[in-house]
Image (cartoon, rainbow, N blue to C red; front, top):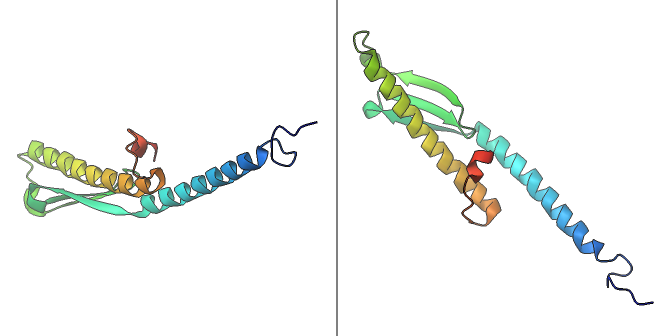
Amino acid sequence: MKNIGGQGGQGGLGGMDNILRQAQKMQQDMKRMQDELAKRIVEGSAGGGVVKAYVNGKMHLIKMKLDKEVVDPQDVEILEDMIAAAYSDAARKAQAMVEKEMSKFTGGLNIPGLGGLF
C-alpha cells in the first residue's frame, strides 16, 4: 500500500506540528510585547505644554499635569478642551507606538484595526 502523506506514516502532520509551534511562539512573543507596551508611557500635550497627558500602550490614561496658570475657575471650558486635546495627542502617539511594535509580527503588513486588539 502506498503512503499518501509522504511523511513517514504521519500523513503530513509533521508540518502541521511545526506550524502550531511557530504560532504558539508568536503568541507568546506578542503577549510579551503587549506586557511591555503596557509599561511604556507616552506624553501628549496641549496649550503649548500647559496641559499634559500620559498614556500607556494600552491607551490607559496614567496621569495628567496642569500648569497652575491654566486653571481658571471662570473659564473651565477651555481647560476641558485642552485636557481632551492632550489626551488625544497622547493616544495618537501611543497608537503609533503600538502599530510600530506590532508591525514586527505582521511583517509590515497593513492590517486595519490590529492595534485595537492590544
